[in-house]
Length: 266
Length: 266
Image 1 (tube, rainbow over the protein chains, first blue to last red):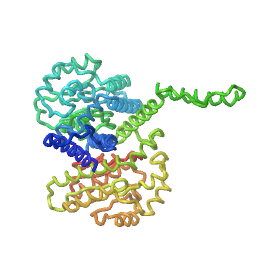
Image 2: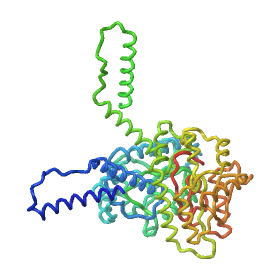
Image 3: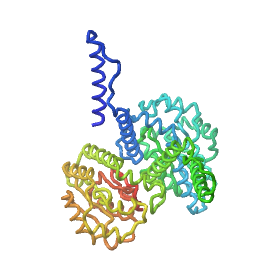
Image 4: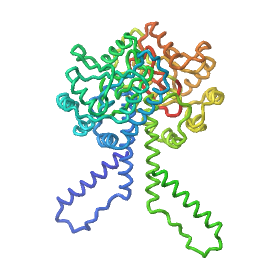
């Protein structure tokens, strides 16, 4: 109804202006356009509605309710940008890091070197936000060539709350396994990037080998977790920004979903 | 810093008023209190901050990042009430119902009567919002005696978007299984309540039997799903407001998390 009113307003406004052009022989009229009295409140209402719908869309992303999607809704472009660049994203990252830290501290480790925390890399330890800021925050469809170029630059900053959690779980005596959808060819640049921004040690860094290409992330990561469990490891915690990092076989005792409304990996 | 400023403002205001009382012999002064110029914007900022923190808290609830919790944070009481009673909750319910409906329609059923959609009941098909509205929307700790009294009244309204989904999956030919943490003693009142508000048929209604009492919901529901799978059923969809409805063994091909920031069931 509101959308209809706004549409009607613009249609009338446009029709008034057109009328002006085509009837220049008419008597002069005052140059004051009579806006509907409540136009400001209607715009505010419209803005609130967009925010409500995009917040709801973001919930459905973060709860894994959506079917696979390739780009964010056009009408949520500004909303996602505001969220990612404003305090919303930071506050959410800090909260998930704190919650994970409280849990990590509460766990009694066995002390046999088999207690593991798994971390994903992209949008979990390293931030590709500088790349996505140049590509519409998810409005543009994923471009693997451009993205690989960005990855190979090796300049992705750390996600600071995750760095804090990583240091905490290492201090507590967890083994840290990094499990990423990046390919083996990106191993050295990934190590350089991680090291440069403060991630200095881990016990495994698992990337996609040639035989893993084409597998869904959920399948690939499940297989790798199963292997860890077969080797006698206990996966006590898992941090990832995609549900495909966390669901599937051999899930962690506790999984932590980091926010990411910019893209979806099945 | 902002909280400190607001605290300081109230302290000064309070001290001014006290001063007035104890110095009534002073010369008359104008009865205009000089508010700090930016007090309105500071209150707005404070309100925005609470909203941001509570939205973040709600995300951590809906993504299952929190440790088991018994009541909502006191500072989020008004926020949760506004969400539940305003359009936020309705819009989220409609979105998850629509997404589930699109998926249900896209599934090719086998036609052997073994394709199943599982629904939880409380806060999924039936709404206990009238009860929680009387109990602080989650601010009060759960009271099983009071809650059972409400359940036995049998007047919980339908969650309309879920009723729509339920009718859709029945029309499409799914078997509908209801799997609830309610106890066997509540079977007849549950059937009466469901029927009264539009849920007229299902293929199984599974409640907690005496042997299930004391089990975590996640364990109880996993066991019941495993039994369904052993009987040859394929669980294609599952709708629930708690992660304990959806996670564990034999999960559905697609799970749909309905919003519920009022309580947590492990």
